[in-house]
Length: 128
Image (cartoon, rainbow, N blue to C red; front, side, top):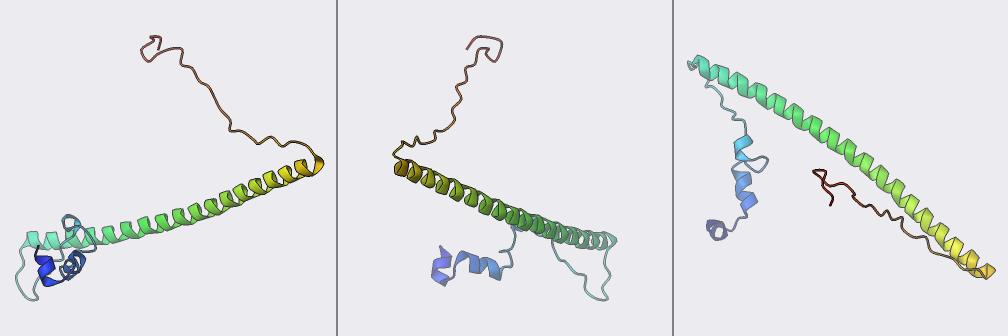
């Protein structure tokens, strides 16, 4: 493959081609008309449309990034809360074990809750 011969990585080549930020099919072309040249009406419309789409795309990306960062912050807060909850439950279990040992009693470990569900009617009103 020619990248090995050049000694460049794939991403470096893509950066040189200005394609590393986004997939090529999603790029909005930035064609500009030459100053003083006669530009056809359809080309003008295309340039206006592309500039409008680029602005909308930039705005949408900013809002997505903002919502993602907010969600990340909420996730971090929930994680900290759950970690504190788990740590406190572990400490409580340890203290209960120690109290039982000191008092000469037995400590029964808490068990997971289990549900046993039986389907008595099938999908098409047939027994399973």
